[in-house]
Length: 402
Image 1 (cartoon, helix red, strand yellow):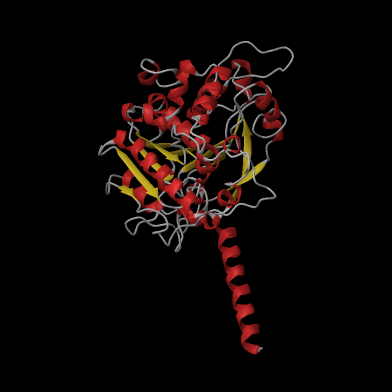
Image 2 (cartoon, one colour):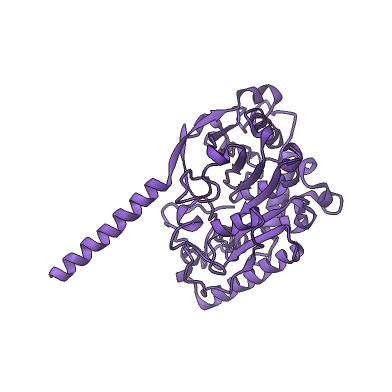
């Protein structure tokens, strides 16, 4: 009885310590609205001004800038874009007035040793097309604005005016749809920054691949093509791609990443939980829900489902081969069931964070950025990495995705 009670107290103590560390690792940063962007037509889906959260740099990081783009999926037609118009993914009116910064955005050396004192910005996502849309006309009935590319330019110009024009170091980064943003806009970001600055790009969970789903259909290819058509994105996609392929394909990094001139680092799970749920086994390809439990928790997957996921990993790694062994392009591809690992303290930099070659994501990125050491690591197949933090989704709050 006494032993049980001691065990319960120890468990409670561990939970309290973890909560304390999580609190210490985070800071809250207020929102900034780019009001002058409205006159330029650079607005969210509902016509409200774009926004970001800015935690100013200090000490040796005063002229270093990290611009992180928020993720949040996409809208591919008027109906799905209208559904965003009344929430934070389509209107700055609905965004929280302050948000927590942690992981790569954290301001304490203990939790973010190489970027803690940089100017750290999180750009809010409210256009639905990874900041690529630019349609001049606004439908008088829906009043939807497809202006993501203008928002990108307006936000960067605003930051340049606030000191980024003096940057010695600069990074564009992002998670999920924001990670795709950092790939799509990598060279454009470089062009807007001072030529003397050391500018690089980081994509976290943004390397979405063009793969068949479990029914044999390329559902994601159709979905991405609809996004590009709805938002008028073609002109803002990499010309090295659109000159060769249909614009919808140029939303997939595998078709243009080798042409990016600016150094770029890819962080991705080979079993990316969003891609497993929405590219490999979307609801439309699994009408009887055979994959539902597996998608919530990889421990629930059958041996056949795991074999299918191993096939997806093989296809994912094949899509990465276009990068070759370029010294300017780094990668941290783990075998976790995860999605977005740079903004969460537990996966960015902690004693139990995911490791590749005995290196955390934080250290791998920093070594690459500062040219200390190349990092080009691909993990062994699941379930070989005990350091993984595999996602477990709550079925009550699970987003069915696309």
